[in-house]
Each structure stands twice: as structure tokens, then as C-alpha cells.
Length: 174
Image (cartoon, rainbow, N blue to C red; front, side, top):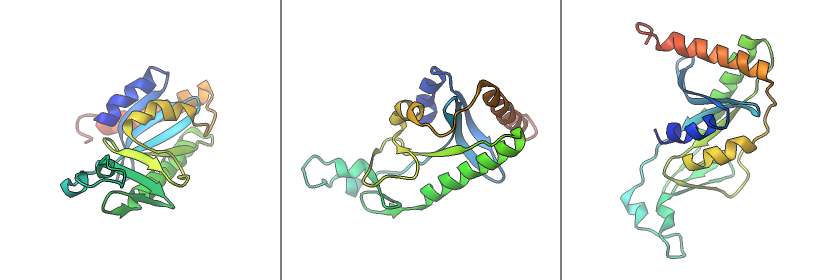
């Protein structure tokens, strides 16, 4: 919900936003289409552990408990690391690219975006795609230059997404 609420700000900038787009055996949490590209957004909720909230990061401000940082292909949380969300976001964006390229007849590149609502997100090395807090979406996505999309291409993409979206969300097709 936090990510969906933030994406309203992108709609105000002219982006088309779809939520919970059904794919082949999985879903795309949010799909954003704009003149600067197509973005497959994967949102990951992670609980903050009480023991981590009491720790500090060495400077006494206690921020370690809600900070995740990306470094060398890994997501580093206060007391664990993960790679699966990165792999999932890449896999889903690749699926979107293949599907939309086939559906529209023109090459479409979908960029993954990984979102951690409620976490302070930083990167110690350059990530392969944006990894952000939900509040960073509206300022991050418009700055990305992944693929220039013409108005006609955008309309074709939006039509294909809407067809899939409406077809899967009609009564009886759930």
C-alpha cells in the first residue's frame, strides 16, 4: 500500500501505473509506463527485528535497525543478507520485456526497481538497477533514461497491459 500510494505522484507526472499485474504464475507488484521507459516494480516488506532496532551503527544514532544497504550483489540488513529479491526483480522485468516486445511487435525494455517500504536504503556499490525506499520512487523514476517511449509506443504498451490486467481481474477469471 505504501508503494501504491507513492506511485500516485508519478501519475500526476503523466505516468500510467498498474498494480498487481498477473504474469505466468506470478505477479508484477506495480508496472509503470512513461516516456522514459517501462518499470517493473517489486515491493518487499521486511519486518524490523526488535534486537536490531536496539543496536547502533557505531555513531550512536540507532539507525542500523532500519537500514538496508546494497553492496556487491547483496542486500545487507542489520542481521541478515539476501540476494533473492534482486534476482526476482530482474527475472520479472525480463518477463515484462519479453511479453511486451512480443505483444506490441516493437522492442520494449523493462527496468526492474526494487522497493523496501519503511527502510532506509543506501548503496555502497552501484546496483544493477534502482533499489530504493518507497518515498524515493517519485524522484528516482523520472530521472532514469532506460528507453525513450513514443506516445504511440506508450499507447500500445498501455493497451496490452490493460488487456491482460482487465482479463485477469474480471469476475470469474480470478
